[in-house]
Image 1 (cartoon, rainbow, N blue to C red):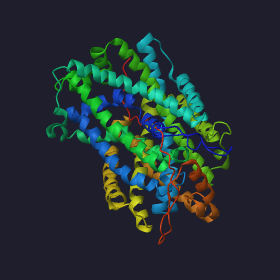
Image 2: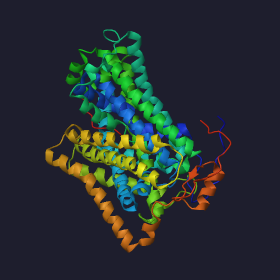
Image 3: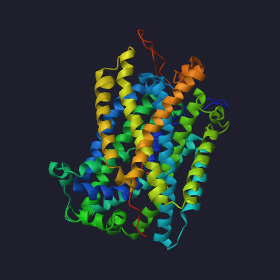
Image 4: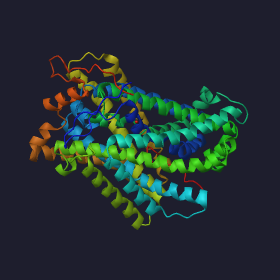
Length: 528
């Protein structure tokens, strides 16, 4: 499809119209860190769920696809920059919306900052595997903070191009492994036994589902890029469905091929003996040692890509809340050249540095404590955010006139809410698998999520009492001037009508759109 020229931008604008469907897909799939999830976490899923593990990823993908129906429908009617918290505020009220906003900030920061511990350990393990070097984790993590800050400081299309390259590298090495297994026919011939009911309906599938849902975290961030998307009413739904479909099918396919590489009877033993080396052994056998070396390198770049994707998402939430008046106004500054929320990015990097250094000074393990203890409540927080958004959709559409149909506005979101509630219960019940911590630590980590939400409700009450003007305009639709800019730049949609009034469609551009732990749940630490 033809490229459109970038619209004019003032020094206070983000880069409107900079991102197409592929760009946004790169951001959200990179946040999921497919290679890290597969090489690091899939062996544990196979160990717990047996050869039926691939079906767990498909079931998680189907659940999130159902959630995406109501989620993307809402994105056409609520046009504010706050994404999740805006949807929740419009459906469940401003008080719940502010609680959700705080949950989003803590959730995305938890998902990102803990991963600097994973970056340090994967770089150390890669240095040891390739050159026998003992690389200290802290300098690598601090260097990663600076690299990710720079990526977020630059323009959003620069970030999209960088993530595109890194994503092709990490998925390409997995495709290379799969190709080698398929060409050789696996250890004993190819089998579809992983999808048989007898393999799927086993007690361990609950644990596999918990890992699988965690592996998708980050796909929902498509809507955060609404202000920078070309024709967001079409781009955002497409990117969301592409991300969910790709991750669900790709995860299931890769896990299935690794099972074929060892054989259904032998793969459980192999995963138990060396979970961290399962994928490296498979690619060495079917492709060659050089491919295993590349996989070591690409795991490090996979983690960096995930960090950058989450960093950009956090910056845009901070920008939106600054513009709302909830966070300090300085965080809303946008770089005059790059069109990036650079102050929010600097603040987020500083927060990450404080936490990373704090864990290092306490003598904490970068993997078992920095990654797992910080990442896990972030993951649960984002799942809770999705649950609130699913509940908000049918409530919202009962209050406004629309022509979306019951599937999009009632059946799918209610079904998604039930499935997400079950998924959260699964993750919480299996939280020890994610944290490798004591019952006391696990209780504190899980309790942090409702505690943050309650703190958000208290903040909402404070704003309502002390700053009523901020509370009154929270999560309101963009002003008419902003909508006019969106119409002029091709970022159009359908404005929401007040209750009892017909929706008012904005002009639709005639030109077609031209062609984006991490959600890395804990994994066994690679053996040295």
